[in-house]
Every structure is written in C-alpha cells, then in structure tokens.
Image (cartoon, rainbow, N blue to C red):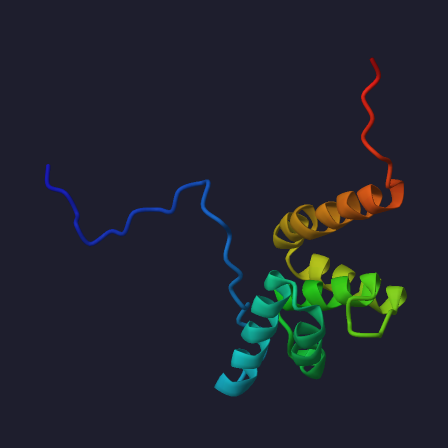
Length: 131
C-alpha cells in the first residue's frame, strides 16, 4: 500500500475557526478589505474609537466578525461618543444569522468578559478577610 503524499493533513479540532467570506457576499477591493482588517485588529487591541471609525465607514460591506465588533461597540458605547444599543443589537443579530458558531465564540470571548469586568467595577467591594 502506497501513501498519497498529495493530501494535506486535516486541521485539528482544537484549531481556531477562521472566517471565510461566503461566495454570495460581494468581493471587496484591496483598500476596503485592508481597512476592515485594520479595524478588526484595532478592536482586538482595545483601540475602539479608531476601530469604530474604520468599520463604521464600511458598515454595509462588513463580514460577520467585523459586523459583530461594530455592533458590540455601538451596544456598549465604545464608539468614541456614539451609544446606540438598538443598532448594536441589530448588527450583532445580523452577524449571528450569518455565522452563528463564529458569533457564539466571539460572544464568549468579548461579551462575557466585558460583563465580568463591569460587574467587578460596579461592585467595588474591598477585599476583606474575616478572622
């Protein structure tokens, strides 16, 4: 029995999913795609106002991941002044309909983390040890 060296190994199940733009979505020019990718990178580093500026400019052309990020910023008021929870919900729901597994992963990563931070800030309870 010979081995077929032409086959590529399958990715492991623990690999991070990567967004692939569906073929029914319009293809973007390189400059627009570059701005969207930069906006997503800025979001991940916490530079929300700059990320918002880039992503909001191309709101109609965003992929699922970018649409979720923009919705998250609108919903949580991380837009450099704009706070529109309804628009945020709408964008995040559109992203969820387009790619539910990816959005659920993003929600776990950003929404729940953000809630935990907010809960700690709201509590502001000093740590006391009873003896």
